[in-house]
Length: 123
Image (cartoon, rainbow, N blue to C red; front, side, top):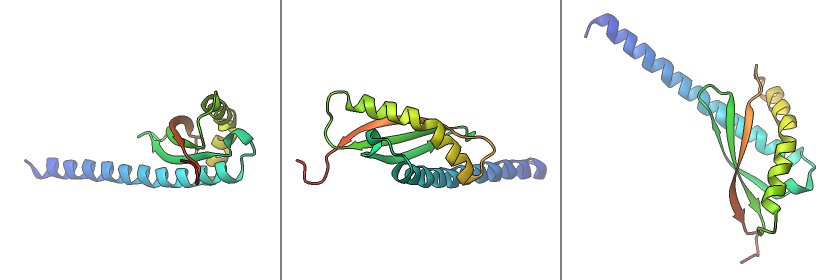
């Protein structure tokens, strides 16, 4: 392998490592900001028991899959009501995230329901 091709290989590896580290940092910052927004800023009673558990940012940083749980029992239509509440809150959350993290483009949010967790004291 020539010296030139070795340096190209190492520079492309370095840039992909740097990109991966950037995405990981952005992933963490977005998760923390979004969790704070959901907990502190949203006033929709349907979302009072939402717990964010994971955020996965796409490689191009345009889309974030946000995994969430709902505290309490699964009543009739409860999951659908929570999903509707998150859908209605999405434009607000996108705008606030773009402001807080100083992004050029607001990240598209896709909420993924992971299930229900019992409240403390429930069986």
